[in-house]
Image 1: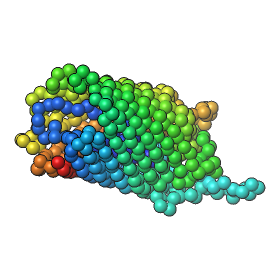
Image 2 (image 1 turned 90 degrees about the vertical axis):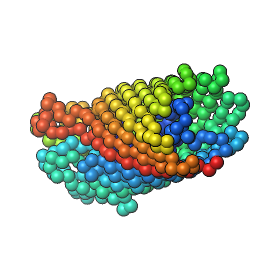
Image 3 (image 1 turned 60 degrees about the vertical axis):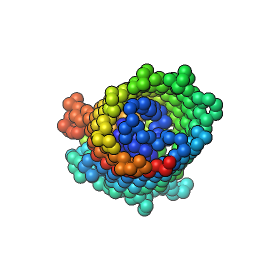
Image 4 (image 1 turned 30 degrees about the vertical axis):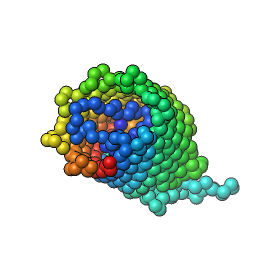
Length: 462
């Protein structure tokens, strides 16, 4: 699922994109199933980085751009993998992101200009705020979430954002016994207002002459968000005093799977994953519009609030089939969480060799989800405010298409170059004819459309 800019959220998206080509799963996507290997006839696609006794250096550049001059990201990634003669595998990866642009703040469009401002700093006891005083806490480094005004009929977006992220990942795989491997690793990610640390471990056991592989893995993640303008009080009015400087979240994920060789050219995989996250899930930058139930005009703006716990269940099934030198990948994933979101993902790609050293791989992915129980694009001022409320389009009902094309070539036995282009299109309910007043003619969907370009090279020492 592609997202608008959210501290930590876009980083996860970019990590998935780059990780697809670098061949490693990002920490932010622990519930996703890993790609299953291929046993197709020898060609450029099958010259992988897992040969014993090799050292592989992999570097890639990602450029991500959302339509309408929204989020823009440039990411560089460098990875090093050492496959020791004894079967141990050591790996490390460094990622650097530079993020700029504008992100929807959750408020609805209005036929009048709208001004937005951050929470106020708490006043000493006994000192009242000056009449008409507004929050004025923009971050000098990022320029995000300061005061800004949106023109009539325009989507309210927080403009002028800029930030960077540094991420590190280390891993080791150890052969414990015949057909049994232990993998452990850790990751750390740093943004101006967000830090994340994770640790993981997994076991894989080969059975029946390596035709069946059973796997079990666990991942633990600890996140801290430090909003530029402080943590707002949930459901309080925009500009009210903030109530803290930081909030934390803890995530535990477990994945169990089986991979089965059906024939020398056919593999299938089935994974089940469970995730449990507790703590602060609210986006401190997201707002919500309380509207006049007669005219549809925004009346008040408040901060959103989300539950402090979220459990996730997903089942992932995939197959890989080789016909000659061509390889077909297909997968389906079912997802459901305690917030009421149910999602299905379908993906297919066809890998075809080009000449003796090159390959191309077109792909198609379709995603759809239901809305969270507490999602709403707006709420009337005469309606009681529920305990949980969000207008974040990532929690709405929508569907999305992803069209991709990958290509690469082995220039020499040691050097490979590769690249990819991807187009993402998100569609949701833009208009609600039953909405009050002017909102019946107002675009209510703030989803994104984006283009991604990736280029990289891989060098192998044998």
